[in-house]
Image (cartoon, rainbow, N blue to C red; front, side, top):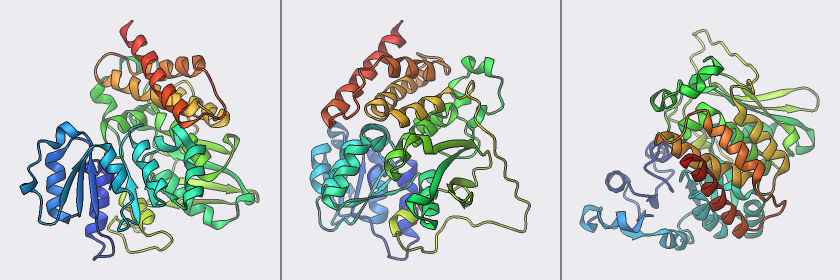
Length: 378
């Protein structure tokens, strides 16, 4: 479990606890939250806990860990442990570009990766999918949208797919006047109407940059051109995404908004098991609404579609620029409306490459961050 102290990590441990022994945690990894990591280790007694930040690891006294649980520190140790034969599935939920390294190590070891870190495919989609094909690794999506698509695609063959439609809640500003978005506060942007997530992902939902990144991820995850990908706003967050087939049939996956369902789907795939997530109550009225995203309100969606169509280095640059711009907004250096505007500028000005190497992806990741920092300092 990579990123065990985040929202996906804690939900995954809920699924494990409810599995009646079907699943067991072998390794828990977190960046710096050592106090919560120790609590999790006491609850599920893994073989290993890994603190990715070596400095933070010094705060753990090995005597605090349960008997039989060993401590390791640093990204190199985590890479090495991905090769342990006891590991059959890796939940990759480290937020942001930092998740690419450990996901790469897991696929290099031939593991099945339950992927919640969308940045892995956004940054290096063709390289990651080629690695998985070469080593026998496999990627099963955890994001609710991509999990829904993964499930709906089982209704037909790839040649029968007309398009994929990703749903979006619209976040807290779906109906706010566009001209007021520049004055959005940090507290307002962190108030999501449906999901409980970490701050970075919550801001991405407010700008709908999460949909931009999901469009790019879907291109590589499902092997479809960007022209066959679309986004629709669905404020109830019940239809998690849809697949339209060439005959006009639309197959959707519906469930109450709870991440434990897509997490368990990824852990158990291709089986289905009873899940601790809530079920529909069909004795109550359920209303489903759909509307197209307003490009003036959500320019990030246009950026994502453009990057999905062009491919190459666009995903890595857009992701890095967004991460740095979100950090700037959360720290009071940038306005909410600056996030998409800065990402547009950096995407337009970057030295595009259609088939980058992993080193080039990493170099442009750093370049994009520096460009955003220049903007923030003006």
